[in-house]
Amino acid sequence: MPPASVPGSDDTVAPDGAPGPDGSAPQTPTRWVDRLFAHRPPGYPSIVGWLRVAALRDWRAALGAFAGAWLNVPLAVLFTGLFLLFYLVQAIGLLFLGGPGTAGLFRSAEDLISQLSGGDILPEQVGLGGAISILVSGGIVVAIVTFPLQIAAVFLAGLAMPWLSNPVDAPLMLIGQCVAGVTLAVVYTLYRVSCEPWLLRIGGARRLSRREAALLLPIARQVGAALGLSSIPMILIDPDRTPRAMAHTRHIVLSQGLLDEFNYDREAVAALFAHELVHWRNGDPVSRVFVRGLALPLYLLFSAANYLLRVFPHPLVKLLVMLIAWPVTLTVRFLVVPSQSFDARASEYRADAGAALAGHRAGMRRVLTRLRRSFETGGGGWDDAVCASHPPYELRLERLEARGETYPLPDRDAPAAPLPVAMVGSLRED
Image (tube, rainbow, N blue to C red; front, side):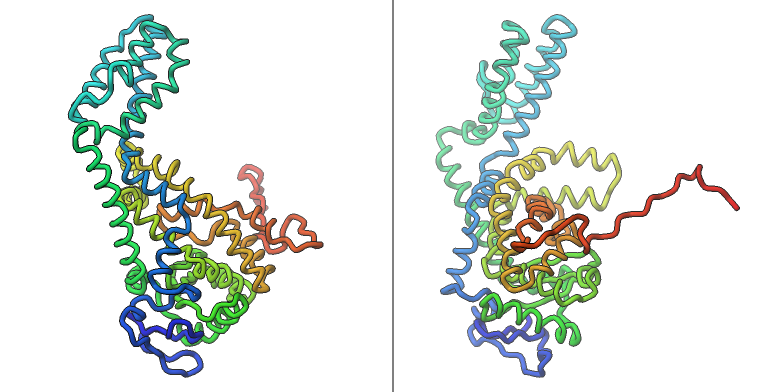
């Protein structure tokens, strides 16, 4: 683990024992726990207080992640999808064949689900069997009217299936799932926070070079002082050419592509530092890690599916992954991500306001105008899905408008519009 500065001081030194740009020797905390959690934000009473307050900052996201991963939501989504499929087949059969010619298909599907669940989980009038009875006896109109109730019944049956298969032990199973989910989230959070330097290096991040430190560290310290921070986290560089910046629990990582995009412009870099320092000080990265820990089973499956799609972009592979992982994908995109959008939008607005508070409103507007998308993507499917809940850049620009000034379109710092390409048929040789 790289040597760290004394928590609460404003001395940030390069890792690997290298002296800072001013030639000062690196300082190392004396207690092992301070070394393990060095470069944490100031203003928290203790390490435990920091982790507890930051982890529970976004309770909606935590609740959505826990429900999606530990309360059988993907299984309920699977049951509902099968119900919709067979309901559609039955409706088409009744509409075009004039009779219950496909009722056996419904019954076979219900029998299959009952066998998989270890018992008769779906009652006769709730689920696929009920749908058949309604369609055959009441007709299409009655079936359409009762359709939402059938959907709700099948979804609830999927949620309760693991517990109803063994009603005697159902309360203990539910308590066990809750305890396991929270315990796993706590362990995962401690692991990510304490091992963050090592994990970032494994991911390719590196320390600042001497000339990078001479340019970037004074900017970061100046911005931190303007925000009232007595210390700043470690600054690392990701060699990735994609313009990205990310505040982690104890580090801020800038990509080489981001620095190249703005040609090391001090105003843009200062605005980025201010934005990420607000995230770091408020504990947003810890909250993000804790939510990911609560959703760890979903996170691993979702990330694995996106990895396969990225590494093997063959249509057959995409089809296979979609057929296998669609319940997990729908759960993440329509439950976990929306539950994070409430606080994610507010935290982005707060971070942008922090840049304006530090005196870098113009730089923040230039960054948003130039990139026109979230610059905090992590390069993975999960992080990209979460960043999709960030506010649109135009609304963020609107929040950053200074009173009394006008901001006409097009923006001066926006990327140049593509030149029109002549049609091949219109080209003439001299």
